[in-house]
Amino acid sequence: NLYINISEENKMKKNIKLIAATVVAMGLLASPIASAKEIVIKFSHVTTEATPKGKGAMLFKKLVDERLGGKVRVEVYPSSQLYGDKAVLKALLLNDVQLAAPSLSKFSKYTKQWALFDLPFLFKNPQALNCFTDSAKGQALLGAAERKGIKGLGYWLNGMKQISANHALINPEDAKGLKFRIMSSDVLKAQFEAVNANPQKMAFSEVYNALATGVIDGQENTWSNIRSKKFFEVQKDTTISNHGVLEYALVTNKRFWNGLPTDIRMQLDQIVKEVTAQVTQFALDAAVKDMQTVADSGKTNIHTLTDAQKEQWVSAMKPVWAQFEDQVGKDNIAAVQQCNAKN
Ligand code: SIN
Image 1 (tube, rainbow, N blue to C red):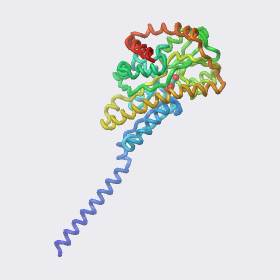
Image 2: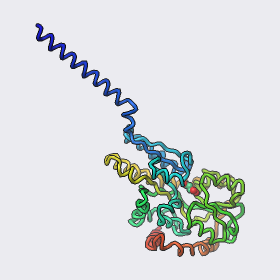
Image 3: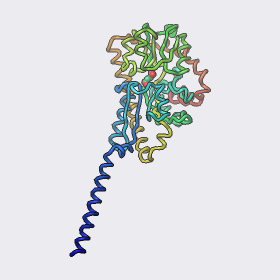
């Protein structure tokens, strides 16, 4: 029957068209055009992967792979491979990278308030620091660079800073005339000037060579950075001074983050929260383990201060607070002191 034959032929043609369209659509899904829809987050930082920040970045990548694989891809660039800390913030604002975690000491162009964290002998210990960053005041402060397009997603801990040189730094007079590398912070500059030393702002990636060649005499940093960057190999003496803190702001481009699909942004916020808690643990562990590794190396003499010696450093450096208290907020200083009292 002719009618039936024609209608069957039409049906077959339709089916062939349908199959062809499906094949084309599947091809498109696998093509680069479709995968360009994947959101790429480049995370650039300056420390090695074996540090609290390095581990935090890799954990962030792992959790995003597990929970948002195919939708979001994270690329981590450690050890200043992509950008140093100065350039990374410019790159972030241009959306060339989407995540960075510089030290809070490196944001003076974007906010003056984060200088709070540099005040010498302000934080008693990492627990007091965490108490403050978790508090309402600490959380409000995290938004300090938003006006400039930099959104703070969380505080990442590194720890307490120690001071080193090629001779023992026991009293503040021992620092007199020495050139110390500092991060780009006016508070840190004032801190070293207060002990008649000569502070030099310098990128993290240049410190080892500058110490090795005598361009600078000393430096201040945490045990994890002293170990991972091998500063202890080129410094004869390291003093357990705990005179300051190294704390990071995990930051993103505000427009990028706010422009993410809501469900994805919420999942990323949750991942940030979980990773931030882990980074605290990585940092607390590193402070103990890395100090031990440095001590065991025998390459630097480690000095412990008596209470009276420590008090001399405090008396010499603490007057710096008065220069910056309006800038960082007396209320914030008071909130830290409350945390100190509890920890
Ligand atoms: C870092 O831990 O990110 C580097 C800190 C520094 O520049 O000393």
